[in-house]
Image (cartoon, rainbow, N blue to C red; front, top):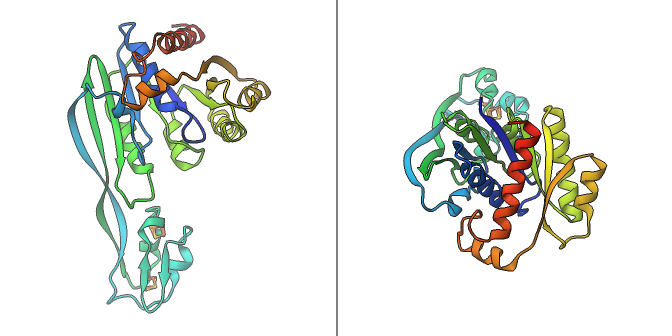
Amino acid sequence: MAVRIAVAGGKGGTGKTTLAVGLARAFLSTGEKVSLLDLDVEEPNSHLFLSDLREVNRRQVISSLPAVITEHCVACGRCKEFCHFNAIVVFDKATVLEEFCHRCGGCVLVCPERAIVEKEVVIGEVIKAVGRGLELVSGWLEVGQANPGPVIREVKAEQVAGDWVVLDCPPGSGCAFVESVEGADLLLGVVEDTPFGAHDFRKVVQVARNAGMRIFAVINRYGMGNGDGVKVCEEEEIEILAKVPFSEAAHRALAQGGDPYSVSPDLKGILDWIRDALLERLER
Ligand code: SF4
Ligand code: SF4
C-alpha cells in the first residue's frame, strides 16, 4: 500500500515545494514509483521545477453555487439569517456573494419562495503530467474562487500509481491544509527557524496530532534564523531529520526552475538522507 507523505510548512515561503519535489525525486532514484500531488491549488508551483514532464490529462472541476431568481425573491431574509458564512446580502432582493459561499446548499433549502437554485460553475482544473517515472497531479483553483476544498479533494481522488505519494500542501493551518493532510500517513514539516516559522509550525503540529499523524521536521535555511524553529521542534518532541543550510548557488539555480535533486550535490545528499531516514522510521 502506498505511503502518503504530507509536506507542509505552516507559513508560506519555507521551501516546502522545493523539498516536496526533491523528496519525490529522491524516492524515484531508488526505483520506486512516485506520485506528487500539488495541493497548493491557489498557487500551484511544483510543475515549475518539473519542466520535463508531459501533460497527459486535464479535466475541469465543477461545483454548484446558489443563484437567486430575483423575480421570485420577496426579500424575507431567511437565507441571509441561515448562511453561516455571511455570503448573502439582502436589500430589495437577495444577492449571493460567491467568494464567501461554501456551497453548503442551505439557502436553497430554507428559501420559502424557492427563489434560490443551484447553478454549476467551473471552479478549477486538475492536470496530470508524467515523465521519467514521476507522476504529477496539480490542482488549479480559478481566480476569484474562494474555496479550494473541492479542487483539493479532486486532486486527491485522482488515481495514482506511486508507492510513495508526496503531498505538497498549502500554507497555513486552516481548512485547505486540513483537507490536504487528511488520509496522510505522516507529516514532514519544513520549518523556518524564525519566530513566524515556529509559530505557524506549532499550529500545523496541532492539526497533524489531532489527525493521529506521525510528524518529522526539516529545518530549512538553517543558520539564518534565531533558533525558534529548532526550539519548537524540541518542545513538541518532534524529530528533526535534517538541517538544511542556505546555499546562494542552489537558491539561484532553483529560482531558474532547476530540479531540486540536481542543482547541488549537497542538497541531493540531504534529500537522500531525509528519504533514507523516512524509510528507516517506516521500516520499509
Ligand atoms: S429566503 Fe428566498 S425569498 Fe427570502 S430573501 Fe432569501 S432568496 Fe429572497
Ligand atoms: S450555499 Fe451555504 S454558504 Fe453558500 S450562500 Fe448558501 S447558505 Fe451561504
